Length: 360
Ligand SMILES: *Cc1c(COP(=O)(O)O)cnc(C)c1O
Image (tube, rainbow, N blue to C red; front, side, top):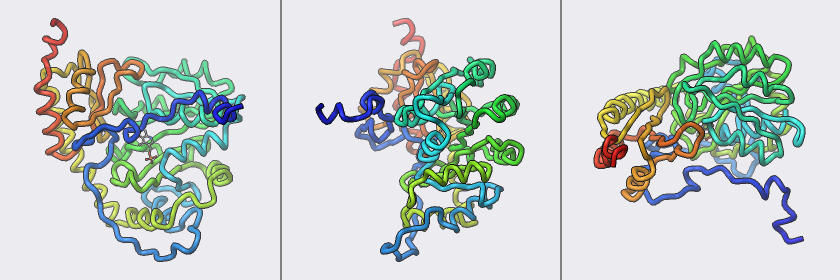
């Protein structure tokens, strides 16, 4: 056996997550990973790198619980929300036996984590408005242990109808977890399902410091759930998931001052999103600009490939969504600074207009 063949069959077959960083590009306008466009400064206060860190640093847990309006026992902190996804699958799904359900087009890590662990993926595509196909989910529920729902959804940007979430939570009671991925909830905080945790012991909510808090490089995320679910996840998490500097900075980001700064960042993004959306709607090559509740905007072009490549060559890196189910011709544009928004608009305005592209 060669070394390659020693690896597990599902790992050999795996296509790793095509992260924005992995896809590369030589840009000076990075609008492909839904990051905040400017860095926030922090000083390290903990000079104890000779010691192992706490598994669940107290200040981080307590401050996040207060911020999210839940009890500290309902919070788990991890290496990004991505680690939360993996922990949920590892704790709840028997490889080769159980399945997860997700609803494309959506975030790519649910399937990558499941496939890595050897857990089957069932897809129930959303309807024409990117809302849940509840009957389709019901039909796939037997043997599924986790249903992932991203709201607001990445990459489409809209919220999942809360009445549908209620129906889903009733349908899955005693059968499966429902994981609401709220990575972008700071951009529409009134839509959070955190207030529903008391009613639904099988509801799990994913959060992150990577988007509105402007800390994607920190790698810090949160899982909110019933104490029972949190205790199960704590059984499978690594003993030291967060380094001391990460915990130090996360604790600072969650002080009243840190949260106020985040709210200003959100206000800036929302202002720029408004401008970007209005201008995109005036841009000749753009067929549709979808309403967004997040820090990115999905647009549809008659043919997105030439525009994507042309902007790429100009150092403006967007996220190509053209290959996702139902997203032909779609590009996802992160809301950057005013100047970055203008760079995208200027570049797109030089693309052939829609009518020219359709009738060459
Ligand atoms: C960015 C993102 C995450 C991952 O967040 P990290 O905390 O950086 O791992 C999870 N879900 C969705 C929908 C995201 O867009």
